[in-house]
Amino acid sequence: MASKVIIKDLTKRFGSTIAVNKLNLEIKAGEFVCFLGPSGCGKTTTLRCIAGLERQDEGDIYIDDELVNDLPPSERDIAMVFQFPVVYPATTVRDNLEFPLKQRKLSRGEIKERVNEIAKILRIEHILNRIATDLNIGEKQRVAIGRALIRRPKVLLLDEALTNLDTEMKLSMIAELKRIHEEFNQTIVYVTHDQSEALMMADKIAVMNLGVLQQYDTPEQLYSSPKNLFVAGFIGSPPMNLINVNYNKEKETIEINNISIDFSKYSDLIREKASSDTLVLGFRPEYVSIHKKCGRKDHLMGEVEIVELLEDRLSLDIRVVDQIVKAVIPSNYQVNIGDEVCIELNKFHLFDEKSGETIM
Image (cartoon, rainbow, N blue to C red; front, side, top):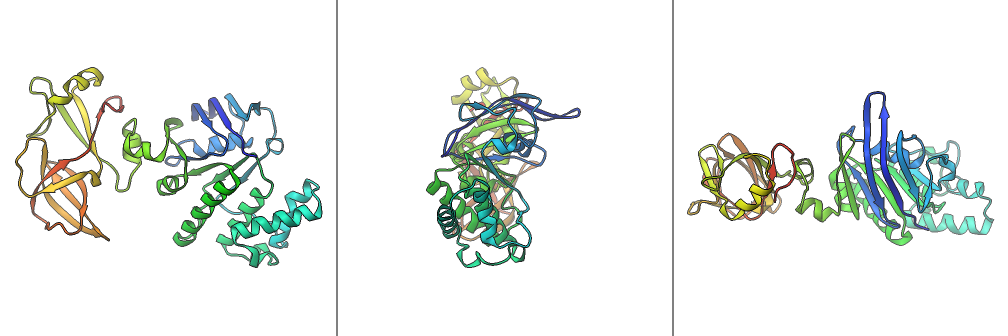
């Protein structure tokens, strides 16, 4: 049965390094949640604290309504799958799947039923009688996931579990994990540094950096409404364009060297939320339109330096004064290297440069 996980003020230190800093998070029963961030951000440490493999220095962890701080891993009713799949040597796939059920002294009939069920879901029926150590890495990972799931744990923890798979196998396993999540209504917590994995799989994503939770939200909200500069730059491929600008209070414009853009309609909001006149203008490459002629004051101007074909789209590198701006546009648009173009911002964000927080 799926269970919720509540983390309150979790802090974990390694010497003088704070790996996780006062983390507060609630994972609802049956949710698929990804911990996402660069190496060293605290995501794996948090996962290991939930599992009981690390003891936090401060804070509490609840599974359902039970405080599990003092419970060993074996009593938390969780299952964990690691980056490098672990299978028992000199045993068959069937033996690997049966082992946790035999430990719980289930009947032969129930063991057989559960093994057949999980083998069918993971599509490993044809290798049940093979020696597990003879399998390729993708098959071993399926066995490891199957051995974790077959127990029907309260929470399934996955630590970079798809990192070592090739692209085709990874996409296949992402689809299967989503299907497993839906069929079993299983609470899953998945650690990854790969945003594409997180965006494809998760109900919610916890974006972390330097041990601090930056934003905990749905993939859609993280993409469309980042709360700060880190999330804005980390989520999205290609990443969001981030340009340093100055706000001119008298003219109510934002200025990039000799380029001024009318921002009078947003002046009240900027005065209310900005800590200084130094701001960051952010916009995603796909949220722009390119024009050969400029007739308005709210367009950026620049010179095309690189044109790349990305299937049905064009990716442009455009030099705007001393910065490069990425634009992704329809492939039928006629543009060449050296063209002077105007960049119309169909949607944009404004950030406070000092705090990094979103203004609008």
